[in-house]
Image (cartoon, rainbow, N blue to C red; front, side):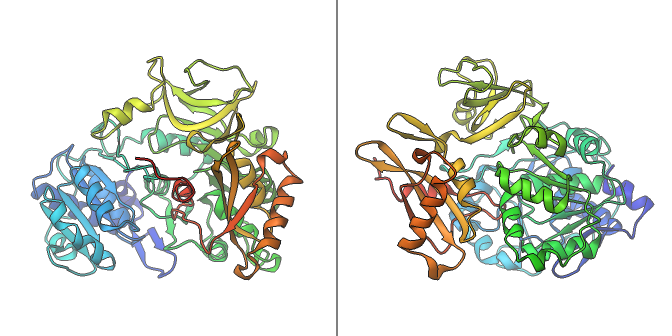
Length: 511
């Protein structure tokens, strides 16, 4: 149930296959290389409970570094490779990292934060060197490939994406359990998706995000091979399923949309028969998108709802979803409660803020005010991820939107996710965001910002077509009054839309 145990049985089996380069990291290499780095970290004075941070592209050593920190009992923060210097410096300094690891590809931003991160005692760089950094390869070369004598489990401390201000580190309690202890996520994956040592897991998203990192490490615990895409491409993802006999893969809804919009002859070109479980999360999936994916791939699509905070895990298998279309699942970890603005619980069918009780504890590192802000007003210890939704009579949860994105127009609550789901399926729409903008009479009005599939089509004709398309499918008050066009929408590589960045352009700054 960890790389060392797998390496003892199948040392030459691929633990990682990089999709683009084809580079393979075997389980022997994963075990030995992570042991060498673990010894180096101990030699640098790091003890269980201390902290490292690393910023890499999807790299062959990414999971090696994560495993080294994990088996050393450390907190480890994987950082987005898309951040600017001030954003990177904030996270490295805020998390208290004593070691920082980056790559030659990212040397420009990595070296720019040296002066702003005085707590870092050791800086390592893979694939090269840069001012202030030591060669990773040279530093680990002389270290033992055997396990630490005091090996124990660490934990990731990942940062929220920071769509509304500075990101916050989600700090779980540190168990320091033996390395072979599987943990809750591994048990959930085993129970729901039935992977084995023969499984092949495709990870198409950046590994610094919570789900790709945690699921990749969990599948490796079971002896499965992880195929890592350096960058998502819809056709290449289909080709990888056929090429590597992928059995399990995790997606986000925007990836489904991009694959569905491939020409029919392209979609039919690849043999997907090996795929047994397609798991998706990160955002609610439009019903039409999921229906079409089920028609294409069959009833193998599984959905879960969770967060970096780890306070809940809801699940909807294919049969459950077909019987409760639109749900994100029923709880397997944490108990959902839908509450009004005063924190009072609402009956089934009523929309409100979704809180969870009886789930694992967490805190936002160094920010007790932020930690308190996600707790229910009555002090019951319930916590929220900031979503609005409702429960049905069978206990299935449906998400309406983020609380911060709800539009109030003329006193009526409008959830922009509904219009986004409709417009996303229009053939001329490559991407879309819907949000509220100021309206002198109604308070707010509904605005859509669209990335057209063909930039030459942007203009009044397409705007009118999209508004009419939406009005044919939704109540008119839920539909955009106007549409603006952009070459590209600001999205995180995992598919998460930075809607706040768009919305703020339309609202006057207030001091």
